[in-house]
Image (cartoon, rainbow, N blue to C red; front, side):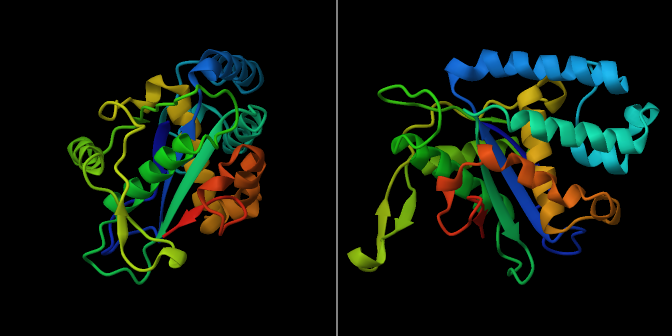
Length: 252
């Protein structure tokens, strides 16, 4: 599972209402195939828009602060984002889990980072355990997490603690209380990656950004209908992550 985010985890004077955490899950039997597909996609973007192979597709920066990508016109940078979303939608065996925290009204003691990551890791674990991911499946699946650079120490500590204590509320039929469903399907500590060097991290970033723009679009994305780009990914969303949401978005 490759993970990236959109928004910040701050609650006081934060510029963003929503924090989005996205995990893109790909089975090892599809990893090389889809990597090659993304390489072919990048070659097409170079031919059409001049996007260099070494340039990172960092969605929010491409719209707001293009930096090194300023040589590409803004409307073409937006076209690249849309084309990337459409390309991902043609990879039927990827599964994208999305966690959204609406920070409005949250108490200052609410730990946005821990809550979002706990929810994502639980969904990854549960979907592995129940064999609900689309695509290939081993008789006894395991998963590993590749996040973009984040609060490395805090995330590592969180995952280790969930292997010892992961309280899940009982379903109403079973009465009040909790069950301790320890994380067991996720192996190793998180393996942190630089997004510049990972097309999969860039894909997770693009998904998180398009979801954030669906929730709270900036004026440019609204004007150019970029607030609809997340819906292009509908076919590869992990909808079993939340039965309460038509697109499987876990809303906290």
